[in-house]
Image (tube, rainbow, N blue to C red; front, side, top):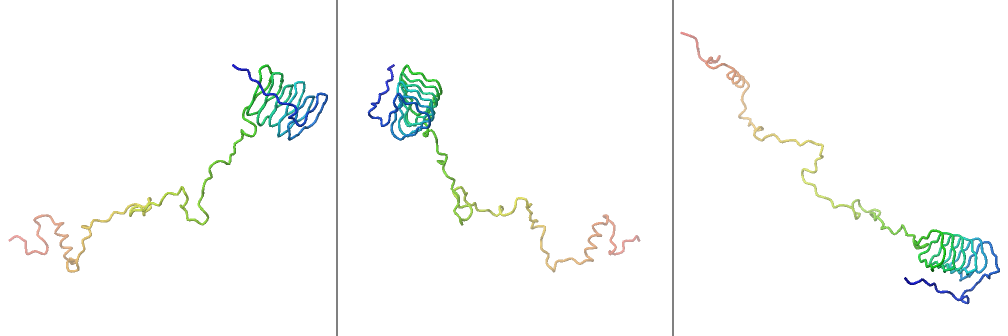
Length: 210
């Protein structure tokens, strides 16, 4: 397996350099590439690149676009684009970066997260919106409304109402006025139905013995 080699940067390409005899403590912010060769303690925040020299000692929480170290760094490092550790680097702390390059021989004690700074966040508003009917639109015109089904003659009646059966037409035969039976004939017919067979009726001719 080929050994990883990190490209060294020319110091002439760096705008600001903190020399080896500088011992600084506080908060350091910058927008152009910067190199630390001395000692620094505090907090570092940059939108550009930070370079740590081979004899430098940095004890800080560091956030930069690119962090390239040859010296010793104590504290967490957040590299938005890349973190480079040369063979002489010593790092005690956690590292979060999308691109982590390490040469053989360096010492790194901590956890490494490759989520990638701001790139690991996802926008929760990317979900598809739920459309609703426009104001003033009739109900049921939305995209989820089902088409109206026509009702048959039996569907117009509520489910709780019992079905009424029609009487048989044969049981309701109309009686014409000329066919009605007088009341006295109806009484005679009822008596004949109740009389035992062979018994003479009260309205017949004499049935006595001679």
